[in-house]
Length: 121
Image (cartoon, rainbow, N blue to C red):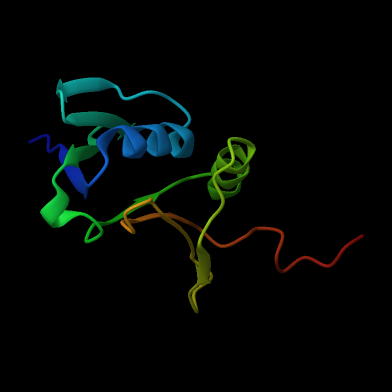
């Protein structure tokens, strides 16, 4: 059985949110569901959608686990999007958190930093 996951984020200013998510994710929405809902594909069976829903704005929490977290963070930074905070768990797993203009949390996780334990040559 194939399962697709759609994670939604409610926003107050739709155009501003779409522009921010385009900058964060580095591309326009994969498709426009409605005039007030745009959808980005984040993997084969995973999607993030932004929807104009002011009563839900700022309450979203989405995390996507990536195989190359550092590359994603550098790419987002090149488009002017910087993390709001970074976390590293005891097992070395990292999470980079971005807050959209409404305060929705969009996190990206990745495995331990391969170079963190290595001494410089």
